[in-house]
Length: 107
Picture (cartoon, rainbow, N blue to C red):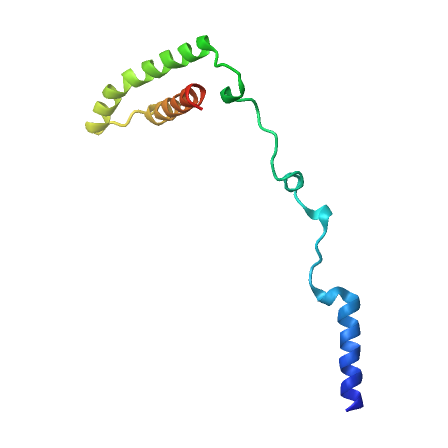
């Protein structure tokens, strides 16, 4: 009985002094953005008072119109079984310009 009590006390002392083998919380191990409320500074947007550049918007709109006007012919080629090499890149460019215009005009 005394041996069992001694073993239990020794185990309790061991667990208390070693932190029970569980990982301990360390503030130094926190990621950089987790400390100041978790909010990292963002770049300026149109909502913060920066107005979009009208010349840049017009240029992007012209490029978007040019690319979009080429699509019916490209889709016609696809329907005939001919896959133009540049159709994927042009569609991605259309999407990118449209997304940028949308974010500048209606953030």
